[in-house]
Amino acid sequence: MKILGIIPARFASSRFPGKPLADIGGKSMIQRVYEQALKASSLNRVVVATDDPRILDHVISFGGDAYMTAENHPSGTDRCFEAFQKAGGASKYDYVVNIQGDEPFIDPEIIDQMSKLLDFKTEIATAVKKISDYKTLFDPNVVKAVLTMRKQCLYFSRQTVPYVRGFEPETWLEHAEFHKHIGLYAYRSDVLEQISHLPPSPLENTEKLEQLRWLGYGYKIYAIVTSYESIGVDTPEDLEKLNSQTF
Image 1 (cartoon, rainbow, N blue to C red):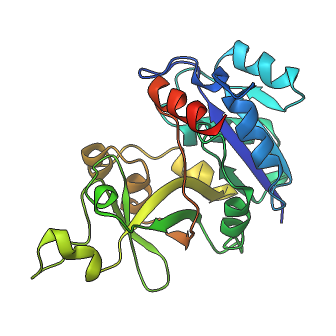
Image 2 (tube, one colour; image 1 turned 30 degrees about the vertical axis):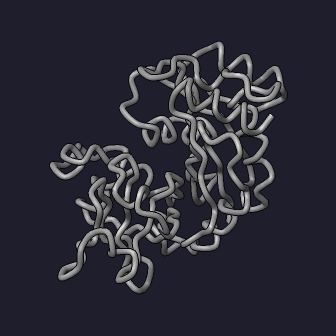
Image 3 (cartoon, rainbow, N blue to C red; image 1 turned 180 degrees about the vertical axis):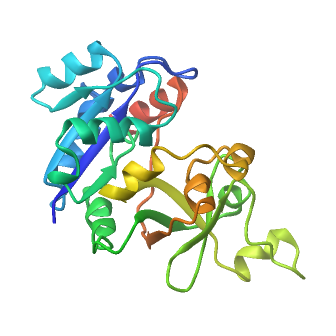
């Protein structure tokens, strides 16, 4: 089995323009993500998919692999599909792993753990982490995943789900399991092409979660449950905090 790792990296960002080139302890954000992804033994190749020549030139300057992609892609998945095609498509790779470009310290082990789900039958795979504190549980910026006993994803929501009937919300963690979604995906090659051509769905537009489009059209998403704590950088304030705590 051959797996291609792709890191989408846009320059424009309403909250943090130029984020992929931001300095973190002497290296750019995108370089740190790229170097961490290279450590994943399950990936046969890692590439950056960008819409800006500054990011492309920078990746090449540190010895990385990158493709220019269109500026108008509505999602990282669509950008991944264009890069996947440029890298040889389904004739070369069986699965594509979409790696978030704003997690500079992503653990390569989580990529390898998720890749164990890839058996040609799995359409889409992702990762979740058990929620253990109430701040995370009720934070609408934290996406929650509801799983079956077989770890198939039933639904994703910014709301706290499932609802625990008969108990006060401040005791819910004592009576049910909740999972935080980690934005890492693996797509079977044919499925990536299919979902890249799907129109948005009502649920996706309501919650602003792209994965609800795939569920809404009947695709199956399976998850690994990991202890990995993702550390994303969304704003300049996040970057300042990360640098002060790490370096």
